[in-house]
Length: 466
Image (tube, rainbow, N blue to C red; front, side, top):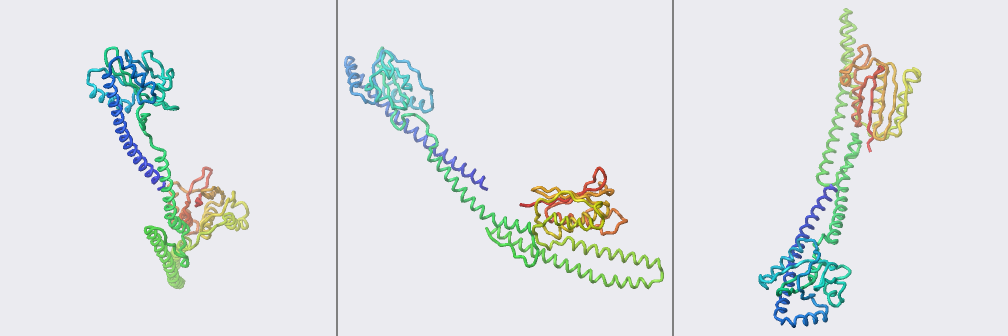
């Protein structure tokens, strides 16, 4: 949002600056052309004045103008037009020369020859001998044609009064058009854009921070989801839309908590209601005289009791009525491994690596998850070798066994409830599914991989959230 705002501000300010500069240039061009026409009218008046003078008076008038100094024009009479190195053409120079030429033609007619150029003061030539500006007395031309230390271009106009007689007029354009430069974006405009952008970014940044705090709080509460009835609801703050989201989240958490409570009560009631008829049926089975029929009834009752216990265990082991808190993974693993070490010795289970830091999770759920993985490895793979890879982003636990492994086409199927590959082992076929559900509730994953040297590797990945 800040980057898009900055882009919008810069584009808006740049567009307004371009429009302003374009209007300024158009206004200055109009003023420049008006000044050039005014200057051309003065030149035409000077030409008319010299034409009206007798030929013998013209040098006297020129000497008088040079002696006065500080005049607007530097004027001389030459026998031929002087050649000089011209300045490169620009749109403004061409516009000025065109305007001067039009005024002189309209005032003097098409008879006299007229040439007009822009010349650098260093390349300016005067009089028939082609003297440079620095070779003349300063009072003759310097005050009219130089603005030290920066010397602007000089407009040189040469008009033929008669054969072998050219009127030479050199002058500067009047201020503020002396330098003929197109205006760039002024420093004040640049500072205005920078300050406006900075203030807008500051205030919008504060607004974004203020609006994002409720969303961060919502994300934190959702990550550390607690369905305890005594947990305080999420504070509803921020804009009306964010408040609506917080209100919907509180409603959702209440509904889930009520649903889980009702589910636990339902399965508890089912367990209580089924236990009595199952026991009564067992007593009646014992009264049967036919051993084969008695065996069939007992087998059906064992299967029914197994289904009830499996369903209850599934509900119990995937229950998320638990708050998130720091979990010492090293202590948790030691507690899970220690009973097997004391009972079976070091040969059946090994542990390599340590966790670098505690993990924010549900302690009992993580204990069930890792315990199920270890139990499966020992039950179906004879031994369990635990390897810890703890990084800043994720905690990884590999549980390797020495069993026959799992067929590749059934690596995902074993996570489904009541799916068991070993028919000669007791169990409900729920351990891996429960472990994966617990990992998913922590944003992690449980995956299976057959090892080349034989056995199965079960990998538990738990991301470390910031």
